[in-house]
Each structure stands twice: as C-alpha cells, then as structure tokens.
Length: 428
Image (cartoon, helix red, strand yellow):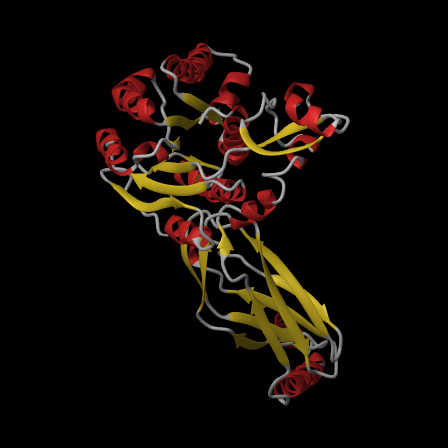
C-alpha cells in the first residue's frame, strides 16, 4: 500500500489533480492503521498460549509437542506461531499459521525427533496476532526457558512391553525364529488336554489318577543377563541421524524390560578405555528406573576400546554363568582377530552373544547400475565389505560364540529374538 501511495505521489507531479486524492488515501490508510493498533492493543490479554511437552523426549522417535491457544478477542484473528525450539534441531524456519474464531480456542501440534541424549532447552513461545485488517501484528510471548531431558527410546519400550514376552510375538509375525524344544524346569503335573505334548506324559501319576497326566514345564527363571555396550570409536558411525551407540542404548533399554518380564535378572555396563556405567544384574522393582538413568548418563569420547580390560573385569565381577550380550561393531576380519582371544576367554565362562551391524549405506552402491570403471570398482569393494561381515559371523560361530548381524533399524527386534531363542532352547 505504501509503495502504491509513493507511486501516486510521483504521478501527482505530472497530474497535479491527483495530489489531494493521494493525501486522502494516505489519511484513510493511517486511520485504519490506528484502528488496527487500537483493537489489538486495547485488550491486555488478547491471546493465551501454552506449550505442552512430554515429561521426557524419546531419543530417535517422533515426539509430539502440543500448543494450546485461546483467543480472547471478540473478532477472528490470524496467528503466526514461532516456537524457539532447542538449538540441537537446527531448525531456523519454524512457523505455524492458524486462523482462530472469535472467543475460541485451538489445539496445534508438531513433532520433534531428537538424535542425541541430554538436556533440550525451549525458549519463548512467540505468537504474532493479526486482526482482519492485517495491517500490523502484535507479539505475545509465553513459557521461557523450559528444559526437557531426552532419554533412550522409551517409546520402543512401550511398543514391545506386552508383545515381547507373550505368544503374540508368534501370532503377529514379529518374532521370526522357530521355537525349538522347551526348557526342563518342572512346574506342575496337570491333566492332559488336547494339544499337550504326549512325550511329557507322567505314567506314574496317570496310573494313580486313572487319567492321563502330563508334566508341565516353564522357562528357567532368575538367570543373569548382562548387556555390554561398546562405546569406542567403532560405535560412532551414524545411521539416520543416530550413532550406533544410541541404537545400542535404545535396544538395551527395551531388552532389559523384556528380560525382567521373563523373570530373569538384567544388568548392564559400558566400556571403552575402562569399564563403567555398571548396573549389577538384579530383579527388583526399581531395576528398570536404575537402568534408564544409567543409559541416559552414558557419555563417551569414542576412544579405542580395550577388550583386555573388559575380559579382566568380567572375570573378576561376574562369577555366575551369565548371558552376556555385547553390542559392538567389526568392519574387517583383522579387527575381529585382534579382539578374538578376549572374546574366546569370555565365552569359556559365559554364554556370549556378539551383536554387530551391517553397513546399510553399502546397499545403495551394490544395487546401483554401473556405467563406469570407477563405479565397478566401488561396487566390488562394497560387496567385499558385505561379504566380510558374514565371514565374521561364521568365524565367531566356529568358536562357539553366538552372533547377531543386524541392520541398525532392526537391532531391537533382532536382539529380543536372540534372547527369546536362547531361553526357548535352554542353552544358558
């Protein structure tokens, strides 16, 4: 509008009759501007807004942030919301535009996906309000300095809470392994019903009751399971915004919950230059909270991991035979052979499962159509690295060490599957 008035003033030098008309237009604009200021600023609390965040954010997952806005004006308004979200997200163009009716309220939401644990500080919630005249905007600011911690993925924890320890895993196809046999911890003798295993018939009880009786078994309980998290430099590799270390931490949280639901004892520790963040394997009510807080506080500089110190620490502090699930990563056979003597030493006293990762970024190179000699070289090298991962799994198997070769996004599911497979086969 102002640019148009300037053009009209310039034209008034050529057509003098326009001069008074342009001044009239400018006066009308100034009048409406004053009216717009008056109706927006006359009410002290024209807008109320509140940001609602979760008690804690879930690392690697979408977290809903809700905004509640109430319009106290007696006319519809157009609001532009600029929320000062934490700097970790590096979002510089955040904006939500919404029209709210007179004396009405609205609920808005947006999602944030954190990729690192720690404290996230929200700044002001800025709401810019415009009347139907749309000549100016009035800013309202709410909720300064709100801190929300980001914990390992508790959303995944809820997802697998009911399914991971029940037969629903088999019904829904989440668990892909075949159940082999059963454990031999006796529970009770009961009457035979159709579907019971005939091999478990108890002939002495059958003769006494004059009815078919079978032995009922249950999974062995109170077995110790430790998750060992390598926080060395091999776990720094990023996938989809998260490091391998964060994938391992998220998986450990969910798997710990499954272990406790199966009446086993869950513990964990991390290692790099030394072993730390230790939680001894127990089955008490506060164990999950202790594990969650420990995982939240895992920090590392991604130094070279010392497997000799890991072996000595396990030998010294874990006296009972336990299942040890080691989250680490090996890229080459040479890298495995350097640490293999220590892994074999651990496997002599405990059941060791080594969980390591496929480099999914190589799939794009392998599946890409090659047109040049350089692309052929790249494809051959990528296939070599993928093949070497399978060789590593076979090498571990040769020495009686179980392994899980998985993609980062499937880590939690594959780790649960391996634990349930070991429980069902009774090999611990």
